[in-house]
Length: 296
Image (cartoon, rainbow, N blue to C red; front, side, top):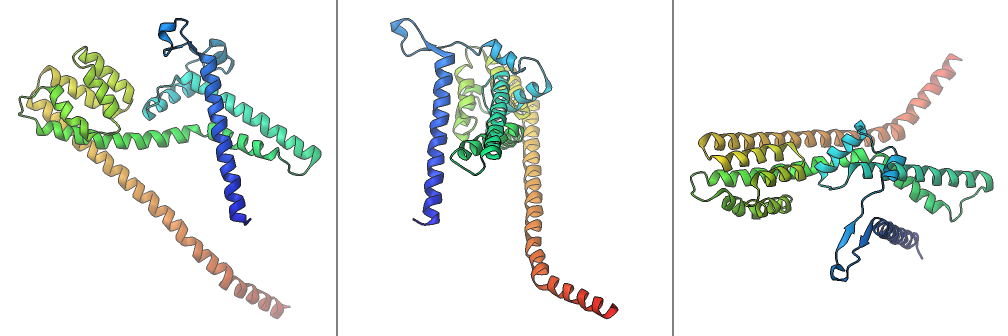
């Protein structure tokens, strides 16, 4: 068996083990924090018990710290409906477990020496701990990517609403016609339309909270104004919002181009560095030895 086959077999085994580990952890959490209803008529209904307060307090995640507030904003911006205190508690638990397992692996290596079968869980724990430690950067990147997708879809929806400026169609009907233009917003916009005739203000408020972005707040306020009174001023404000979203998208595109050009500039300097090291550096050393021999 070649080295490629061995590597492929090893990484496949690691992927299967990681999937089984995640499935086991999810099943354990579901067994601990969820219980079925005791009535036979509600067999398929699971009742949420909630996270124990002692678990959150043990990891000091029950206080309104800056880390907790930042995780709340990031999780909401990423579209995750997770309690930030629970997330922060599990993050700290994962980092502590990774540190303990890694320290135990290093201790085994120092005492007995060599590399055995224990190094795989140690490497897995160290990698998982690094992911948990740098979760802020991952969440920020995910939130930024989702915000850009929301901006594009809000531009499409707002442009379609501007197309129906002089239409006699109700705002709910206009939004229904805008629903096929969305992908990321389709679920949240569908909830908004389903709750529209029950409580429009509450539906718009929940729509803003589910998206958790500044663009969603501005768009929801425009929808609230259009629901109360459709006028040219509000459509003009909606048109300004569209221009603002387009400007932000253009700025983000220019920023990505600048970052890509910087990376390409660095990559282009690598061959030049190797050229100097391979071809010019020996001649420089030979000239230095020649001048040293002449001076001596």
